[in-house]
Length: 426
Image (cartoon, rainbow, N blue to C red; front, side, top):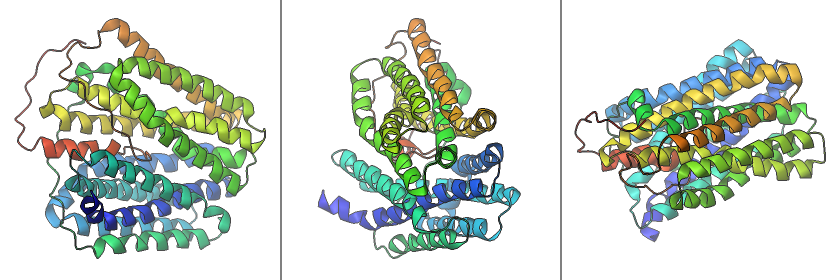
């Protein structure tokens, strides 16, 4: 156990520093955007650029890894992260920021791929849960810590952007100087979204809606905190409360879904999300402490629901299909994260910042309602090969593969043959 931990220590340190930079960047960008008096719709275009870059990286980064190796690719990508955030500080123009955020999305997605590939090379079935729990804690602590750096500086000048660039650069050192053996290049991944939908409609629709919910919150949550009168410190605490609620709730939700029909858990999460989002609208403008508590309840279902959909999709797949299923789900989720901010931003501009949770209420209702309808259309075990274990997800970002599922599946399916088309209940 300790040998496995020692082999990924430098990787975890690089991940921690990268997530500190990410947390700082993800909060200072909306704070500065609000200070520039840009509309919520304009800010949502930054999110669109980011998520397009994030999704595109899922296709292009493995090609670079296979050519030049993990460490060189990680070095290049984190350098791009540093450059992109520094450019945001130098050129304060919303049109340029769309491009800079695209670069950030491309770079952070590829960095996740490198980190999770490396981590999966070091885990075994005996220590997988422990090491991925450590990964979850590392990403959460780093993200929250980075958000709390914003109150220490002035977002209206270049100081925080420079600090973010420095932190990203420091993240290179532990991995670049590591003597650990490098992981193997990722396996080639094919995408068959039509086949995935035929296999599990509720997983695909749920992944899209989950992406829309998380994309709306991750990219406009900072705008919500600024436009509802919270200070930068209070806003950081509210964002941290959402992440804390997510981390605490993932294991209970996942374990429950391992024991009963996952779609029932989806319905329950949808209902819980509806009521917690309505509660968040009602407490907007009240004491910040009350908002923190309610935000934690909202966070309890914002991010774990994607893991439910991935697990359900894999329940209905053969082991040789895991790579295709996991990668397809990641793409659907990424598309959802692109649509979320674009749908929510005009509503926030028209009806105020609390309208963010009005739209999220509708999304949660759609998520739970569709799962309930699918229960009436197909029995739990129809088409099921074998129920897989739910895996907790790290602090989710748009398109992030939960607990390295894609890389784990790739390593388990290196000798998989071409998939055969087989009829499955719809």
